[in-house]
Amino acid sequence: MKRTTLIFLVIILIMGIFPSDASAASASCSISGPSTLQPGQTGTYTVKVAVSDAAGVEAHLSFSGFFQKVSGATSGTWDVAANTSTTITIITVQLKCVGSAGSSGSISVSGIASRFTGGSPPAEAVALGGDSKTVSAPAATPVPTASPVPTPSPVPTPSPTPSPRPTPSPTPNAENPGSWRAAEYILDSTDAPTVNMFMNDNYVVPQEILKIIQEEEKTLTLEFDDFSCIIDGAMLGEHLDAFEELDLSVKIEKDEGLSAMVDGKDVFQLHFNHQGQMPGPIVYKIKAEGASPGDTLYLYYIYETAGVIEAKQEVVVDDDGYITIIIYHCSNYVVTDTMLDNAINGFGSGNQEMIAMMEAANATSKPTTEPTDAPTEAPKQEDNTDSSTPSEVVQGVPHLLYIISLVGVALLSVLITLLVIRTKKSDMVKLKKK
Image 1 (spheres, rainbow, N blue to C red):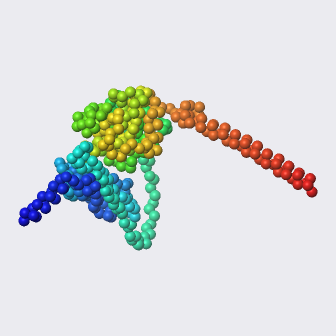
Image 2 (tube, rainbow, N blue to C red):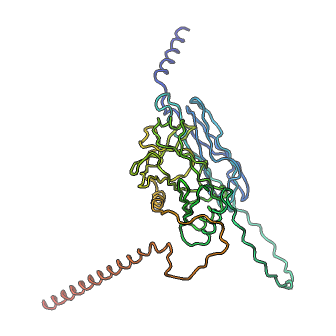
Image 3 (spheres, helix red, strand yellow):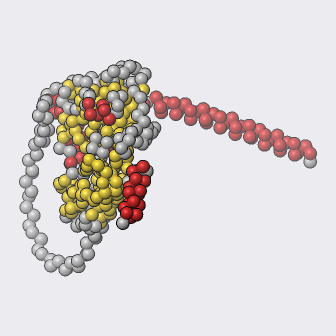
C-alpha cells in the first residue's frame, strides 16, 4: 500500500514539473439540421463545438443565397474561467429555403478558440476545426395533366385604361429626413457611377439606399463631420434584406481593458456602433489621432471573449493626417504604432478588391453636394455631347490607344516593304547565276 501511494505521488510531481503543452488543446465544430428543404420550407440548424483543454470559442455561421435567415444569431461565443473539455451548443438559427426545386445551397462555420497558458502571453489561439453542410431542394416529380376540355371563347370586353400608380415617397431617416431623401433622388436621377454626399452626423443608412447602389452598381461616398465612408454597390452581398438600416458611426476612445490586452501600446481605439458582419466591405477614412503624416500604423481586431488579437491591416498616415482602412466585420479594434508579438495571422498584402478600394478612397475628392429637402421638380436633361460627364475622365485612354495603333501599322508597313525588297534582290541574284 505504501509503495502504491509513493508511485502515485511521483506521477503527480512529474505532471506538475512538465505540464501538457498547447498541442493537446483542440476545438472542432459540427452542423446539424435537415439535409433537404422544399422551396419555402424552414429548417433549424445547430452548431456544436467540442473543445479539449480550451477556455473560449468564437464561431461564425455563413450560408449561400439558397437560404434566407428567419431567426437566430449567426455568431456565438463561449468562455469559462479555466481550460476544460466539453461540448457546447453555440449557434442555433432558422433558415428558409429560397432556392428553386432541383438546386442546392451550403452552410459553413468557422472561428477561433483559445486557451489559458499560465504564462506570458496569458492566452493563446487554438485551431478551430470548421464544418460545412450541403442542403438540397428535391426536384418535383412531374404529374401528368389531363387534356383540357375546350370552352367557348368569351366575348371580349373592352379593358378600362388603368390609372397611373403614384410613385411612393422614399422613407426618410428618423434623424435627418431631408438628407437621405436627397441622396435617394440623386442616385435615381444621375448616370454617374460615383455619387458624393455630405451627411453631417446622419450616420444611419436606410436599406433603400443600399439596394439602389447595389442594383445600379454605383459607388456612394459619404462625408460625415469627423470621418468618411465609401460603399461600392457592386461588392455588397446577397442578403441586404437582413439589414433594415446600417449604422456607420464609430467612436474613437480608449477602453482600459483593451489597452491592457496590448500592454498599453495602442495609439487609439475604434468602437463601431454596428455589431457583426457588414453587408460588404466598407472603406473608412479616419483621422489618425496622435500620429503624424508618413507614420506606419497597425490595425488589430480584438476577440475579447477568447482573449485573442488578430492582425488586420498595415497602413500609412496620409498628408492630411488620415488613415484608410477596410472593415468587413464591426467590433472593437486597436491601432498601434508598433507590431504586437502576441498577435495571430500577420499582415498580408490584401486581395485585389481591397487594394482597388484603397486606391479609390485615396483618390476621392471632397464632396460638393450638400443635403437638401427632396426636390419638387426634376432637372431638365439636355442632349449635349460636349457636356462634362464623369466618363470624360477616361477619354484620354482611347486616344492613346489610337496613337499606339497608328504607330504599329506604320511599323508593320515598313517591315513588309523591307521583306518585299529582300525577296526581289534574292530573285535577281538567282537569275544572274543562271
